[in-house]
Length: 72
Image 1: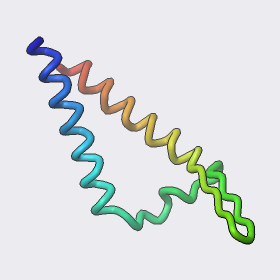
Image 2 (image 1 turned 90 degrees about the vertical axis):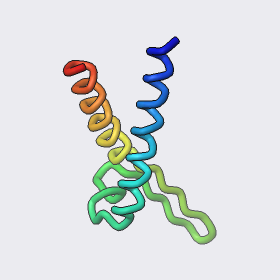
Image 3 (image 1 turned 90 degrees about the horizontal axis):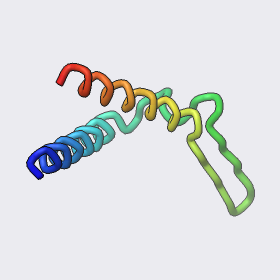
């Protein structure tokens, strides 16, 4: 049970760190405007899905978690 508690604490710390980074870098010029992000604008409707941004963030998080597991 102790290992699970440590993992949950680590996951919580990572989520807090990501939240702080997002607060500090709200106006990152390239994030959210990559080729592959879907933006549909109509008269009374706007749809935005950051597909390419989501993929890049997923790759970065996967690399970080891989490195944490490898050097642990």
